[in-house]
Image 1 (cartoon, helix red, strand yellow):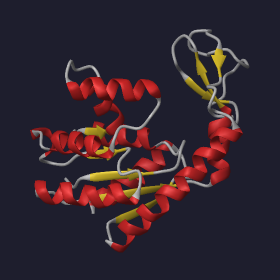
Image 2 (cartoon, rainbow, N blue to C red; image 1 turned 90 degrees about the vertical axis):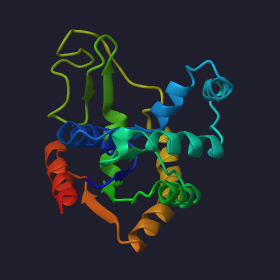
Image 3 (cartoon, rainbow, N blue to C red; image 1 turned 135 degrees about the horizontal axis):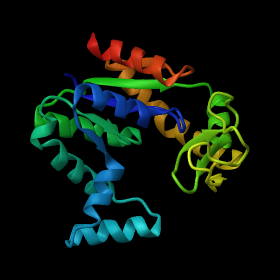
Length: 217
């Protein structure tokens, strides 16, 4: 099994696809966010630093992130492949990731780019509603995923709410940042002939079939 990296714009569903790959192949899902949250619970100097940094809304220093990722990838469960998510976030981190892989004797594997039209992403973001009771997610812009009664959860009858950052202005900001930071990464891995572009303008099930076929090759 090759290592897998997911690249995708906000609301493209890469987290869902990563979970499906994990479920089928049993490889670990390495999320930088999860690593940082776990470290922040430790009663150590680095744990306290990460906790304070996350609490302040700032970004953890790159050197710390690199160290934590390398330590995680050294673990035995990564020997037969893994999914890395949320890293690299810019081209400098991609270069550093190459160095980490070289030290560990790993290959970058498959870089899967889930490409979704911007207008579809916008509808997913602005239409998302979440049950405040059971956390079921709906989308009022998708007739196949909208609640039967407006603002009421089908499962438990709880009230549905919209996250404060699920608005058009926040989406535009996030999307612009994504394009600026991510396009150089896409170009970088394309030149390395490891980039696999997947059409993400489809159902979750069909997108997974495409990804599964790609990583089997």
